[in-house]
Length: 293
Image 1 (cartoon, rainbow, N blue to C red):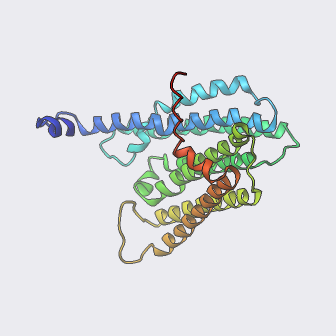
Image 2: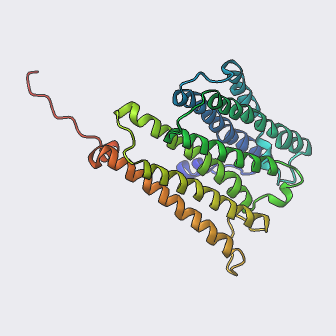
Image 3: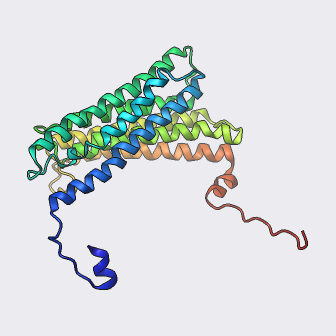
């Protein structure tokens, strides 16, 4: 509606599309990215990376291929959990899509985590390398964030938890800061020797990175989640200091996250060299070929 008015001065009737239909359409598309693509990316990366790290074939390989397909199908019908707080949303969709089908994602991700952990278990004794440590951290975070999502995907509890810091704290932050981010770090640490032939030079910096990032994510998520349970709304400014202790603890978590990120970047710099790290973002220009060649 904004583009025609902005580009051609054509004003469309904002009431032409029913708001409830639009919200369902919007959340269906976004949830295919937030739930479908992210969870499938995570599962696929675990399936590829863990066997490489432990030198063993993925446990239940034939079954987990079906699990990924099941996760895609489930993710197509869970969008209504974003509308649990919308009273106009039909109760049937709230219960079926918003609650019961959403719980199906816990089954698909549970099977995924089981297959990955069994792969590691069957490969014992396993060296707890830096990439594997971050993989385990991502699994732990997805379990915590997933359980929080399962709790709030409830028609009754959503009345209390909707639009509070619980949603963005213990669910979203654990899934993204803990689960997805730690998996990305695991991939980087695993690809570094494959692409450059160089292992991360400082194991101490890698350990600082892991514990600071993991600890920061947990501290921030739980502080925000506890504030949400006490009634702190998101996108709301409180000037009376009511939730200041919770936010102070969350700030500590944020500082730990920054410490972890600094340790990660410092480790990359000492491993690859400043020039090589800069050239990742500012590639060198190729010298022109001599005339006549």
